[in-house]
Amino acid sequence: MRGVVVSPSFFARAIEALEDQEDIRAAEIAREETEEISHEDLKAELGLA
Image (cartoon, rainbow, N blue to C red; front, side, top):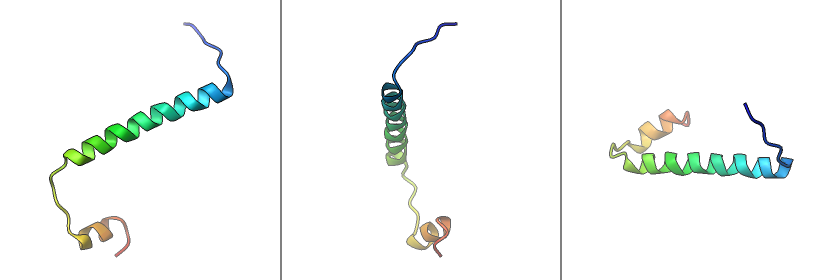
């Protein structure tokens, strides 16, 4: 096993970049969805109804 020493700011930026990539991929997947949902169903799903 190997280890690498990095600064806390570099580590924070690296983690943020990984999270950004996850968010981008999730958005791409969501855009591929074709199922439509009514406004009322959406509000209920979000607990706003």
